[in-house]
Length: 209
Length: 420
Image (cartoon, rainbow over all chains, first blue to last red):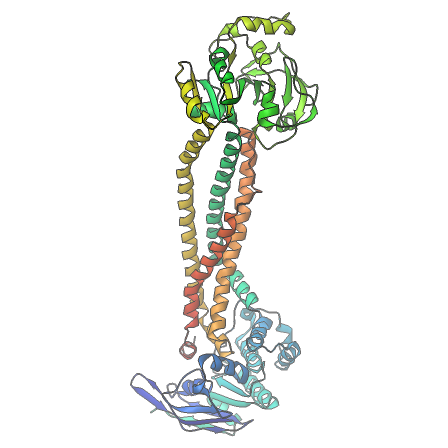
């Protein structure tokens, strides 16, 4: 499903090299590492948001970096769902509007799927609410819905729990695990949050050089 | 969906979007007011000026001569003796020479003493009801006067001396309405037209007074027993006065000969409405330019305000935009959505600008109609307004291009790294 080979990025003089990865369909992988270890860079590389200095990322045998900017954007919308530490939404739109926008951007309008997902994160009743009225935990749950709205094959989560208390943290992790499983999607979480370590069998650690 | 996104982005920032819209609307309003006023002014002027080739009257201001005798707005000029201008009616280049005599009014509407051909040949306004005047003191009312003063066939009124206020009423003479004209949209709608004899009867010529000369108060009592049937003979004996002669040429050559012929005379003067009006419009042109400059200045502010508003909002929204890109939005979609915002703001500005511009013009129209008896309205449209709409929309989108390009160039990975 995802293969990486000889990936590296450079920030000024600092070069970060990443171990090669091989992730199969339905796998769940936790990437642990301290700040500056390049966790986020790795995730951005996998999502085709960042271009590597060397090496390549193959998703379903498709080299992400060989795609033109426009095709990369499309590919991302169709195949990858992102979740960030701070969930950003379009403030001008309500919960439903934000989710519909994501559907619109990939051309997949599906209201029942939208409602189903909201139901699963237990936020169907907040559908018409403004984003600013949600708590951080609720926002993160909505961002999970957004990541899953277009039925992606890959879910990439960057520090999804760092801003949350233990209870919310647990909810989010369970949701991420269960929902990616249901959708038969690859789940990659990068974090420095040690609370997550025991929840995943499959984990690697990145060390800053 | 993109339309909804852009629209919501505008209305969630009501103050900054509002400022851009208000500035745009104001500049459009000012441009429209300038255009509509000048258009209608020129139209009215030309419409009336083109009917008459030459005005002959007492020496003085040419513009005043034209304004008072053709447009019926300025104070009347002094009188001239009909015998001094009688040679004009016989001139082979002259098709018609219609005398008019001004000076009195009724409730600020002017009473014009003239010949029947003023109605039948010059303005060619048909009667709505009644008949043309046949005897002294019979009056045909213009459509607007009749309506506003509620005059009907058989209505009787007293003229007052002067143009604007009742300084002196001619109580002894009863004018009677015998006919009402159909509306024509021209100055005739605002006039009370009667025969020259009426004016002569009310102002006996032996007084030898200028038509608006108020220094000599009438001291004599009007001759109550005066028999109208005989007044014609009386006037034959004295010199008859009129305010002006409205001349139409029969030959294009008249243009070169008649004015100089008139101007050679000592007591009289000629003025060509077309030339005087062109000069007047030229005089007003700088006012139009000043308004235009002001409008463009405000329009410039509006454009700058819109650019800054959008740029600021880009700063607030860079995470949102990065997020959109991550969700599959191409850079082009982002560019387009910002351009759409510029387009919508411009559209709002145009909408309010047109409502304000035409609305205010309509209000001013009421005022102008009340004070000058000239109909102005905000419900007319100039072809140039289409260009204004197109231009503003285009400029609105062009100015949205700068913020749109900023959004287009957002580096997703860098933006998302700067965690808040």
